[in-house]
Amino acid sequence: LVIINFTMGTLQEQADAQGEKVRKMKEAMKADPASVTKEDLNKEVEELKRIKGELANQAPEVTPEVKQKYDLVRSVGEECISDNELLNLISKKPDFILYDGFEPSGRMHIAQGVFKAMNVNKCTKAGGTFIFWVADWFALMNDKMGGDLEKIKVVGEYLVEVWKATGMDMEKVKFVWSSDDIISKAVPYWTQALDIGRRTTLGRIKKCCQIMGRLENKLTAAQILYPLMQCTDIFFLKADICQLGVDQRKVNMLAREYCDSAGIKNKPIILSHHMLYGLKAGQEKMSKSDPDSAIFMEDTEEDVARKINAAYCPSVAEADDAPKAPPPGVEAVDAGLESMHLTRDDLKNPCLDYVEHIIFSVPDQTFVAGGTPYGDFASVREDFLAGKLNEAGLKEGLITAINQLLQPVREHFSKDAKAKALLEQLMAWKKNNLAPPEGLRRLVATDGSRPVHAVFAPHASAELTLGQLLTVQSQLSAADGSHEVVLWCPDWASFALNRCGGDQKVIAACYTQLVEGLKALSPSLMGRVRVMIQSETLLKNPSDYWISVINVGRKYPLHKVLAAEDTKEGEEYAGQVIASLMTVADCLLLHPTLL
Image (cartoon, rainbow, N blue to C red; front, top):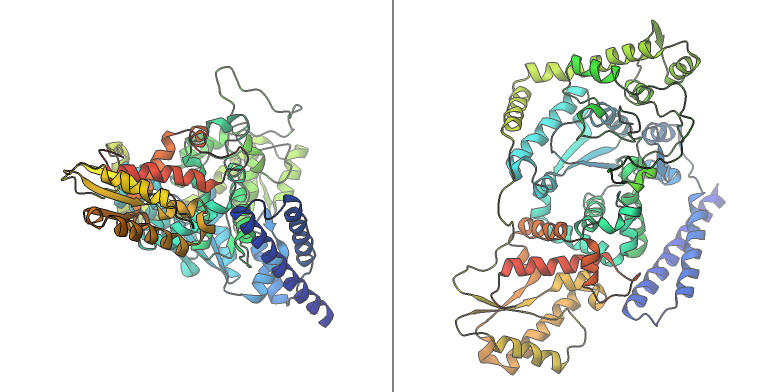
């Protein structure tokens, strides 16, 4: 045992040292591509993988109590990356942190309600604290509830009430509202996002997007930002475990890869839960946009019966499982669906899926169908496939079981005063068909009293040339006397572009040098120039600024943004896309007459 522990310690030290070596080689390669060859870098990366592989295969010595907690948490996931890391975490950090996120934009389907509640209870029973990242800011960004943040928060409170009624144990559950933290802690959040962007290739980010393959040319620039922000959430919340669905595993893997690039030792563990099928034939997952694709937590008994009775329920797999061409006039979509399910299931029966993952997710559950009580899913499936339990009997039992699970929720929203008021308010807003606000949402950095003559300083460079200094001086001097003259210093965009090796202190010093040089050359000119540092300005209203960045990204296809970049194909980084979108948002906030 002593020898094993010594070996693990040695391997960990080797992995740390090798990881730091690879990280420094990558940084050197970005600063000077000729300093490190790809062959040498790949060799060191393979060595790092070898050491980590050996380390991952070393399981820690655990007590029966730790093993019991591990089994409880592990039962939540269809996949865990990695099992040994999870075992190590639970044995060394009994108060571990898990996270999931949700956008409070409307209805909650039964997987998000019952299935999630039972999974959370398992994790907290094992000692974990579960953090829900309430993505109200993202709902605001997407103009949900008419773009009214207060209304969006009410939706979030409603969803919390649903979970309470479902039986989620709230003692070790925290709800963190993204709008509060993204605004109040904008510097650590957005610099983290930019750091991930500057270290991640565009090709890697595209893998996180669910519309790939033939539809890759239809990606908008904004779709590059979403995976970066979700990845940022993980580190921002200091999550040990990402407990999301299988459909989010590619983004979660990006977070682990970022750890290698940034030299972060403890990677987030990925515990991905099963994704339920939609109720209709061929639906790989449920959809909030299709009300008949799933059971929702506020569905009536009649709704449940209608949907389940109409649900796809085969007892024999379809003979031809090959991909089918879309119907005429229907565009091919979602080449990323291969990531929705990790286990092979030729039957793809949503009714059986509900029995296994909804009904039997509840502890000590008995499922009665066709007059027979079942204590486990395997027996239900066996009888159904053998013909002992027919479709009508299965569906009748499922309707009864689902309604029993939903009844406490119905009662809570009819008897609890707070919950009842929330539901009535939501129903009233739903009837009003809230429209998103009109006009352009942007940060406004000037008072509009005078026309603006804006000069954008070059992106930061450790070597400021006299030619650059004179060019900026000439551009500033060209301003009409009636204009407000602004020198815009894009420090965060420079960081996103990995200028000066991504060292923010060096970037700040570059702009200090530029401004001081201009003051020395033309003190009278600089006396009427307003120097605006990008990071300082956008922090006056980071919410409106970043919403404008994302809205710009929605307007432009990714390939159009890339066409404006002077970058060789295959060498693009996500940070370059962000910097381009930030430049447009900067123009919007300055609203210059002359740029």
